[in-house]
Image 1 (cartoon, rainbow, N blue to C red):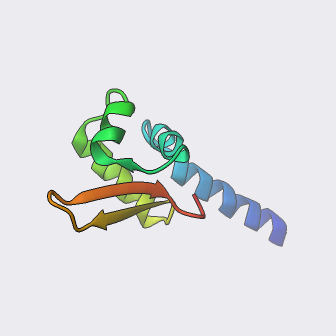
Image 2: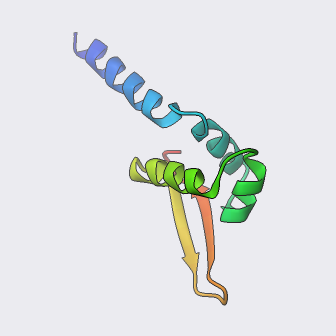
Amino acid sequence: MKKCENDIESLQFILRVLGGKWKLHILTNLYYGKKRFKELEREVTGISAKMLIKEWKDLGAIGIVSRQTFNTVPITVEYSLTKEG
């Protein structure tokens, strides 16, 4: 019974990560390395900037994607998969 509960929790987590139209596209692009915001926006064809931000926040909240800011002019921000991602 305990294993079944663990399996259900794992499946719920996977569905939360991959649910929606864009998350899998974003994760696939980040799998190949760090990307800047505009790179992701260009490579995930059809996504708006607003939706990309929303999806990134969802993935960041569950620890799959990280955001790193560099103190340059203009400020550089890179997105990448975490170890869990």
